[in-house]
Length: 462
Length: 120
Image (cartoon, rainbow over all chains, first blue to last red):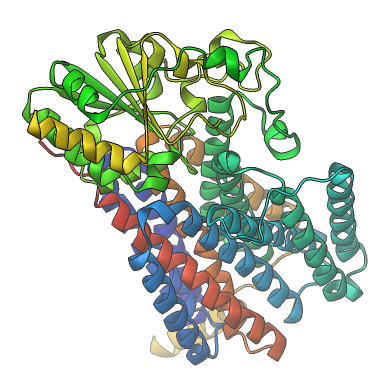
């Protein structure tokens, strides 16, 4: 009977692995995405139930209690989170996943580990190390995204050296775990503790606009930690699922870095030099002209195609619903409205898309950067809402600027540009944006949401 | 005939291991098998994920994050094994956290994906 059971369990794991893959494939298109996610959830359910049938699992009651508690908290968080806080939630869950990896590997060592198997011990060390870095790094990322007061961008000299020291120490302790398994638990928890500190210091110095890269990277770490745990427990499903997640995170990280034209190393360990471009504020802003909601409404009325480029500012102002209202008003007047989404707009990959989708804007209107740029000459009015660096022409023209080479949305090539902003303050890169002073640009100063609402009102009255 | 059959199955049962094979083996070829699985899974992952459009990257992150909660499987094994109090406690905590990760992750992804509707 036991033989049959373990074959059955392995079969369930195989089914679950296949369902994970098929489910992820469903995410390649919005139409199949919901079902893809449901398949993933089903796969997890199968895996969990199958595991509970495992012969080593004797006391189910504690497990059930744990699952109920975890589910309750998870459901509450998921149901009540505002979409603008999505990056924080992903960071938080990511950290929890990392913590679980540390605890599982630790639990393995506290149980009946095979102390003479070097590769298993190495996998245990990897699981704990990566899991701990993921845990603390994700929590710091959460704090930054949530803009908690005590989590600032802390940079100090010698930071790279300290980080390196911590990294080496934790690897050394991991090595000791393998080499001296008699004290395995001592080395393990020591290593995890050091890795926690490493995670904190790695993320603490990274600024808000670089968060998309960091979250994607931490996402992949949590997958790698799960995979390592799979090597420890000799569990194929853990390895497969962990690798899928790890690959996903790494690809997103690479996409983000390419979209910012900065290497991962620069994001993690470099600091963005502010204000070292050749253009000063006075030069860039000599010719700034401001406008009013009424004027903008008049321009929009006679336009044939309007492009809206959202940025993190739109999320902060919670303007996405007002944007939808304006969009509908324009559509009713036979004005085509499209959205240009820069890959690193917002605090997470795809952040803007989610906010606009939440506001009920059809996803076919959300264009990627390259598609947007290729139709820029047909755009009559481009509205920049809460975005700055991603539309800064200096990225194209100034090789010395901190954003040099970064692909941007070429709104300056549209016929008219309206920038909605509270003031002329710089974006994350800390440099002037000559777009604001360009001849075809008008500045609409004010809060993002209020400005959009005012334009809508003027449109209706006009 | 029946007696022979009973004898046969009895002998068979004696020859086969009474429990499932032990959780880990020391052979390096087994380790290489796991590494192979890992490598293939990464390859499949890369293939699929590069085809996911940027507009769905946020649900991808939250969805893949939920999948990383597969650690729950390991947590159940640790929590349920009754080998030592420490491993059970650690396992229990891991179960709670991993479940939060899984349930919250899939739910929030579902919520997000429901918003990507085609409209007029």
